[in-house]
Image (tube, rainbow, N blue to C red):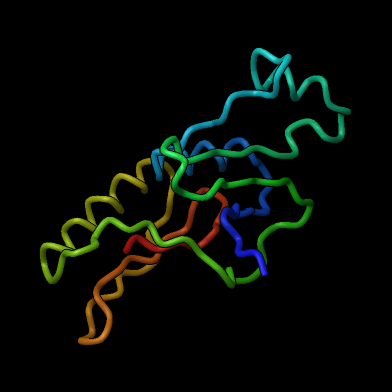
Length: 144
């Protein structure tokens, strides 16, 4: 049986390009080049039927290591908690106050981009500290 080598993470959202550009800033991702024959993504978008314009956007890890993130417009709003979320790993290898300071610094940077700080979960002897947050459309994620 063949194993999966690559995957993408897909977000349902109202404004795909806006959410994609937020995650570019969070993760250091970039918008890939537009399809061949188009100078910009806006040019490509205008070539689509009106109902498909603005319906999707993507961003990629410039190193090619991380998964592609894909954002697709859906008519319904977010209603319940995500069953899957991203962990933005900024505290790897850090413990205690040093870890919490790194998490809080990243949280402040992301709040400035439009994220919402939800809750600080302090180390409990089993798990290290993390901060639960929401992106600009309410998708939950953690700064870990």
